[in-house]
Length: 134
Image (cartoon, rainbow, N blue to C red):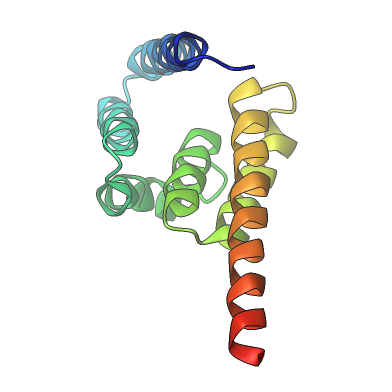
């Protein structure tokens, strides 16, 4: 049985993992001198945490226009698209990232979230359809 404390601890661990990943990405990009890209990716991550997916998309799209295979930008776009229930597009981005970085736990977690959220939405749609059909 999951308690509120377990849920809170899980969220704290997710935030700490995300912070560690952001720091690592920021350090790597800072060392290469790419401050604009670093800033855009960090802003996108912040907007995702604030549930402002459209704003997050605005920060990752320019990066993806320059480099359509940029894994961190694809990951952020996948997260934002998942929040918008754009499942097919989110899945495509997240699976592309998973191919590039197969052992990334964050990607695996988001793909699991996508599957669960999609199944819930599908069940709701089927329930609504059954009600209309009666």
